[in-house]
Length: 301
Ligand SMILES: [Zn+2]
Image 1: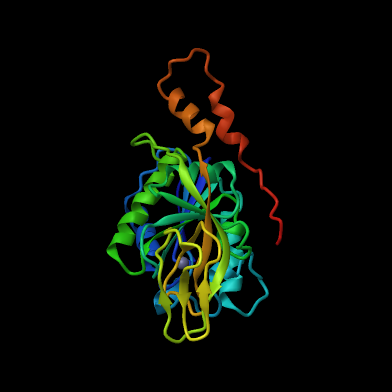
Image 2: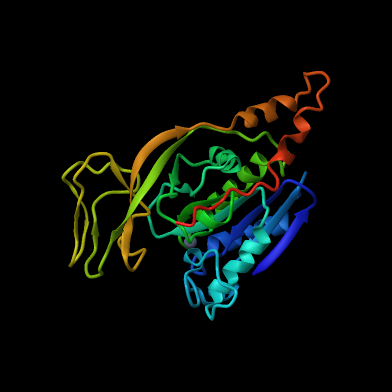
């Protein structure tokens, strides 16, 4: 694991790339930040997680790091030990952005498992239309085990577009949390898509008939291969991370449109206080400090 810190004090946020070794975009984004970033306030941790897997251009060396959290320091698996180190480094972080890519088709989207205030702030600042709530599904991923983490699926694995979009997301994230003050962060409501279940795949001539976030009509077949025919019975189901060749054992996920998520109240407050129109204002100062050190309990499911 490579860790570079920039700036000092709070808030402390992190950008993590290279969780999967066959997704070079995240590493490229972090390298760009290491080269270019000028921190205006607080601390940024820039992390390249799985260096041996990146070196080998493989998803992992022994076990999938993003299914190995919270990790096991005594394990023989490299990634299980690595997960504990990543947990230690990111402990107490006020917000974390993890950059991924996939073999799934666009649009890019964000994923969270627990909707904390910093997570709300992050996802409503990212230039994505859809945000997946994977809280019912994922218990061994980084976003489910490291508090205040948002993952971004930045685009096609190995594409230049994914590097560009991942960079754009990283800068939006750093502005949203006050690390960069070169321009005002922009927040917008987001459509939440709740992840419901994985769609199994057996191998052998896979076919996929609907794109990500495209409503599958009731009664239609979403995907099939030699063993499975996945017919969707009810209306309102959409594919997430769907691809024919992306994963060995699943076509992707089923999701369902949920509520729209509004930007946090304090996002607007923070923007208003920068124009200094109010008098006697020591009030806004403590807002960021209050969130430091609170660590919501994981439910362990
Ligand atoms: Zn990944």
